[in-house]
Image (cartoon, rainbow, N blue to C red; front, top):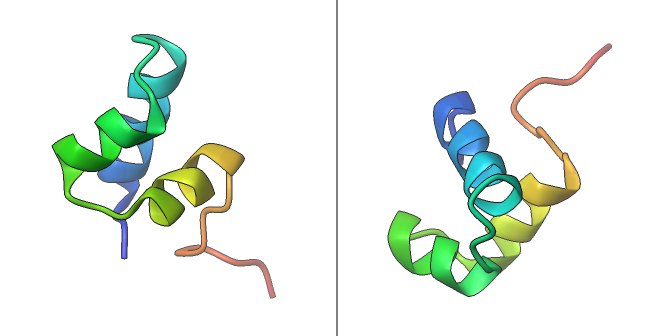
Length: 49
């Protein structure tokens, strides 16, 4: 599970630095599916009730 720091790191790497999903996956050690979820904005750590 991603912490909010890692979530922010992934989004910044993709949007600001233009890294691909595969590059981010290799650097962070998370799967490509997890990186895709972070980029879609699915912050699954916090949910409203």
